[in-house]
Image (cartoon, rainbow over all chains, first blue to last red; front, side, top):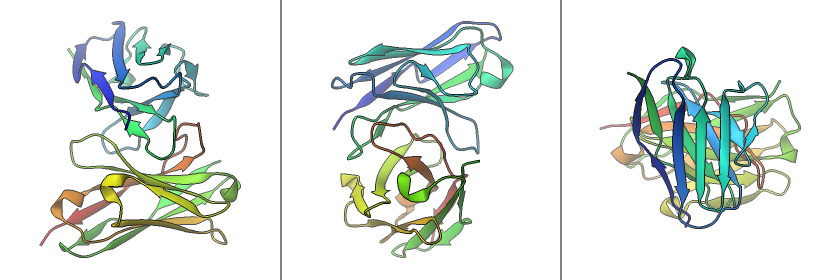
Length: 108
Length: 118
């Protein structure tokens, strides 16, 4: 099984801050990595796929990078709508998709 | 537009079974698969399994093998997830999502809360 480890688990930031979330895979997953945003009571929303490709309609302040086992999600200038929980997910195989534990971005 | 609409909340007793539906619209149902993901209160996302709709192939997370069955009715574009022998640990919101090999889960249902309580 491929384990996904996210850090930090909680992040306190202010509007306008640059925010970075890290995701580490236990084995190489090439660039088969997605990032999702989830707000309370809502389903996850796809932000980034193939490690760095922006999903249609997602603001350009979101970006992703990395390959192999180390990945990052960056929000260049945090907006009020961005306070949420973010999850990474590897999708190398449909036998076992796995998610990171999540990073909650809170208001500082 | 692509939509996945799930059935309503359920309350079940320990030992019972639950069956959640997920009706798709806005795309060709059999060109994709459907994955199921659950989220316990305040916790992260747990992948449960998926069904490839053009041939009915299924695969399940090992932790749920033997308790979960994913099926589909292609005539109504509806997928189903049945979970048996429920315990309080199965209390969660259950999501369906459109799936495709080597693609992320791009569209999700609204979620179905299943509460297991005596």
